[in-house]
Length: 340
Image (tube, rainbow, N blue to C red; front, side):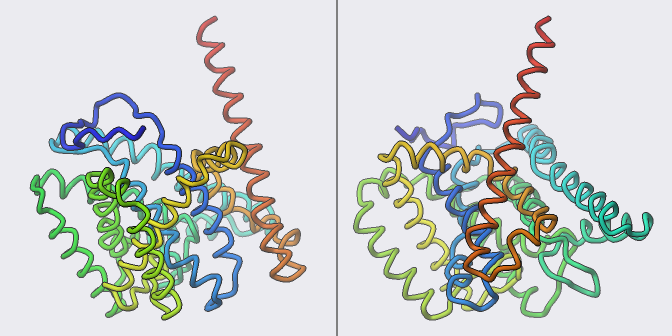
């Protein structure tokens, strides 16, 4: 059963919560969709469908499980935790990406270091101001800063009406996109992403009501989602594309609700649940491996889209499984060594 305790009574220092199975399944669907979305041709129906929900879903899911931060002590504790678990892995995988590129393509060492540092500084999903993009790990940087912003607003505006602050910040982020004003670390994107964190946090508070009327709400959400998708409405956070902003937010929320309900339905199928839940628990690893899948480009990108749709996720998930297995083995050996 989902813990429906009032989140306002929960502190950052509370014990680790039990993972929510359907939420892990939803994250697995989203991370799989991310791989396929990066494979599909730009402007195609599949890519537009995936971009109508997958990135906002990650932020909504993160907001759903966010702990309430009400003091500066809690804020800095959460900041340290997120820096270690989100930002540092992004820096590490970017460094590894640069090292592999240097070794494979025999790049100039100083130029390679400068390029990777510049990419990491801007952390953009596309080239801006003459600077090359960092690729998909823009998401990790944006997730870190949007969580930090979410916690900061929660401390500065400890009111149940602070959603208005997040809405104003999102409108500022949209306005910056319209004037092509981009900030380092994708901070302008974070202004919009923080709104989705808030929506996920607010959704947790009304989740019992959603669960009670899940069928009619999901049906209505599905109709809105599909109608907006067919109309070309979507929010592409990485691409800073916010067409029909209000409708785009509605599309993303409705799509996420449908994926959440679908994920709950999958809970009854144990074999599928076990696989997807495992994927959902390791989305960070899968994203990092996918970021480096250019190494195996010749294996999945030379036989057309149909082959790539199957081969690319298969390679990424297989390598991710190996990485997770090795890391778990190292943790086990470390624990045994500590006991000796």
